[in-house]
Amino acid sequence: MIWEPELLDDQAHLVAADPSGMLPAVASAAAQVRTGRRLAAEAGVGVVATEGRPRAIVTLGMGVSGVSGEILRAICGNGAPIPVTTASGHRLPGWIGANDLVFAVSASGATEETLGLAWEAARRGCRLVGVGRPGSPLQALCTQRGASFVPVDAAQGHARAALWALTVPLIVAASSLGLADVPEPVYESTATLLEDLAHRCRPSSDTFINPGKTLAMELAESVPMVWGSSALPIVAAHRLVHQLNENAKYPAIFGELPEAAHNQVAAFDGPLAERDIFADTQGRQLRLFVLRDTDEDERETRTRGTTVRLAETRDVRVSELMAEGRHPLERLATLIGLADFASVYLALGYGIDPTPVSAVRELKARIAR
Ligand SMILES: O=P(O)(O)OC[C@H]1O[C@](O)(CO)[C@@H](O)[C@@H]1O
Image (cartoon, rainbow, N blue to C red; front, side, top):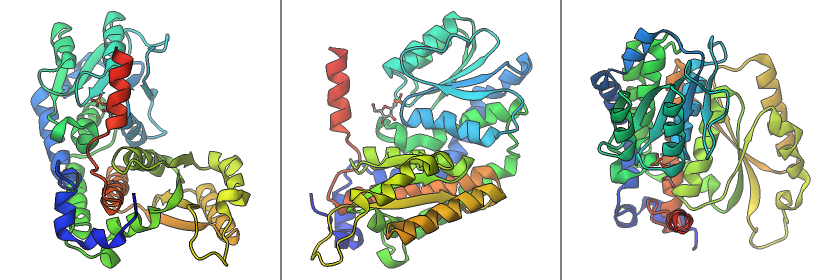
């Protein structure tokens, strides 16, 4: 597969190479915020508040659906009066019990691990809310246990094309419990910012003024280290890594500051950071992508700034991505929106169809045998 940057401005290619419409799905983020808000109201997720505040909130989900739980935790923030956490894999942590509220998120409503944990949570008497495909096994479980269920029809059934529709219902439920401070107009202002971003990143906008295509250009042919420099950007960095993996079939190294400054930073002196100034063509090299928030405390600013300067003095290229907006939901959504566009453009610049993930499918089928 060869990186062909000119493909990014070839309108016919952008349509033909994306037959399942991942690019339009990414551009639908604003609509998803509005849909998620409406679906949450229709499903009555606010009912969780009538039973009082739980001991903890735990979101179950794999891959993208797991990111929904990370977003919820970041939006509830460090000051949340109860633990807001996530669980995935095959075993539900032993401490989770009847006093806890469990969100099970699965676009397909059929992911083995998520369903298994949701059944276990129900068995332990946890309060349960499901979010996912209508008519799925997850909905059947919620119906059987008398739990709320938010039906979300993901485009093409892919969780990554429905992040906001899957996540907003969790935020609405947490707000009704007083755990997330998201006033009603914030959903609309977030959607408006996402629309504006989608306009700037639209396929017909040329690479040199299109932030999504520009970021794809920076990612291409690099070995990306993707770091978040504080709580919200850490979630967006994780999302970018997932999207690079699934959309562009591209590897990426996730890191979070300040932790990455204690280990990953050593790679600035390693073999992938070396640049041969006499070589005709450079091999794939380390490049640092730092996702950052407009709201940082002094220590975060110092760590980020110093780390970036260190990379630059080692000749490691650095791209900084800045959140937009005021409210945490706006800031997180704009960072994620840009990451999503870039991952799809990266796929299309390599001539890769962003939608299918055949290796993941094959692995799932083999495990299920
Ligand atoms: O939301 P679901 O359907 O449970 O899927 C979870 C994850 O599994 C995958 O479908 C791949 O197996 C990912 O795309 C997704 O992030």
